[in-house]
Length: 252
Image 1 (cartoon, one colour):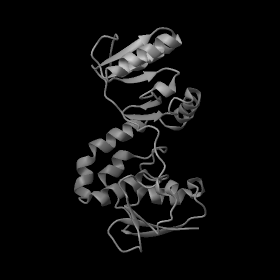
Image 2 (image 1 turned 90 degrees about the vertical axis):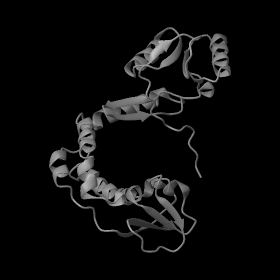
Image 3 (image 1 turned 120 degrees about the vertical axis):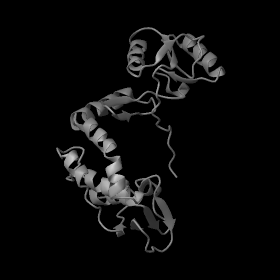
Image 4 (image 1 turned 30 degrees about the vertical axis):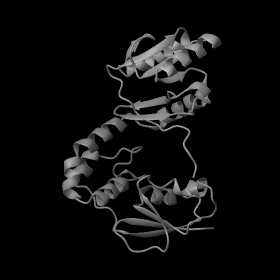
């Protein structure tokens, strides 16, 4: 199974100490980012769980990294990806929606370019949609007591062209006042054309992303299975009728 080089996490740093060492443009950029997150920037001797080393001189940087790691701190070493315990992504901010783009420290330029594309794509109203969904939780729970049905209803509304299409101009208040039921439980079959997830059609990718379970014969490519939700069951064996949406993968 393919592995993640890093596990993306969103960490709340408001009021928490973070060590920042170094000076110059790189250190200033990290300082601005930490300020936006509300972190308290402290020196090397302070108690903290995270540290950022933005020292240009190689020997001094490596010595600082070693000292901090010896204390058990997680360290970000600017321009030294092999020494990083964590990296800081490029960020698209649509409060409270945050989109983070990371390359594991391999190419900050690529992450920045992707951020610029997403800035153009994602509307400023995305945060308002997130807040509306949060405010409508009680209504949705009342309308759809079953968690699976509720999830499928929201997924259908958020799909391209749906009443809550994140890239559209739908009326979230109107939909939440009378949320539409998702389509009935059932099964969909996807005949794979190759082992490449890029060969999935848009509809097939959406089915995988919304399925409650994925049936396959044991030969389904891991890259295809990874397109399903993390909490969707992967079942090797003959498909059977079960509540919710099932997707059956047929090997090429």
